[in-house]
Length: 274
Image (cartoon, rainbow, N blue to C red; front, side, top):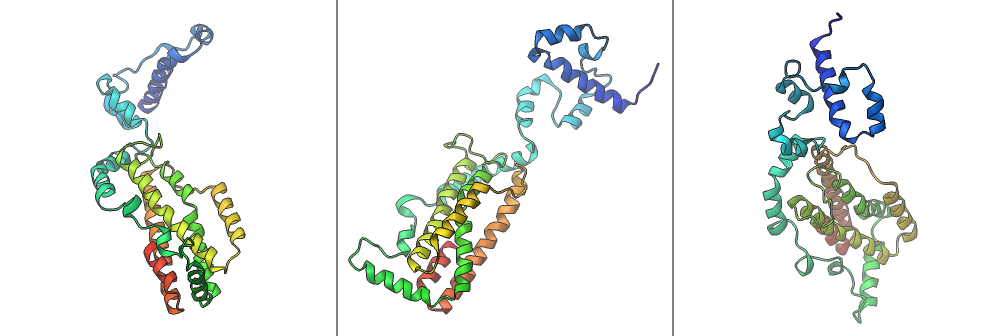
């Protein structure tokens, strides 16, 4: 008799278990054909003398016990169940921050129009003229950076799509009431103002080819974006932490330069977004 290692026996036993479990979903014609096979694997189950519960748990990441079926199904729904557990532990804090600290919406929150000339007012022509005069004193190199910052902000649909790939943080229905889903939508609504404000300012400044910028934004969103998070919330928030910090620094630096060149309105805009 040929002997095989315990490791090989373990693998065979698990494969046999999967084979026998899948029978309920296999066409009868296939089962009839397989019934004539001499292989003993088709009728095997996991033998506790070959595969212990501890060994099965180590390999599959879940307990092999019918009493823990619901837990097993929940854990195997994720690629990163341990990371999801940690994310879920933050849910009460996230819930509180959404309601009380981070995100103001509607009438309570600032809006792009608060920083721009109101074209419904009688003095709108003079206000736009003042904006353009201040913008004219800002070097083109600064505006190049400002355009890059605006394009980054306008790619917001890509970022919300990315957030919805992070396990434990997604919004599967679009109106899910979980803490992380509410945070994702609230964060998106807050961020949406940034691109709107910069876009309108650049348009009113008259210093940019807005159509070319709009084409760039459309291409950017169409092409999508993959930072390599692989659905892992840890990798995802590691990336977003650096990305958010980078945009904060860039907006702040543009604001400082705008102030140096006399564009106090642009300095105020960048400071608010940063």
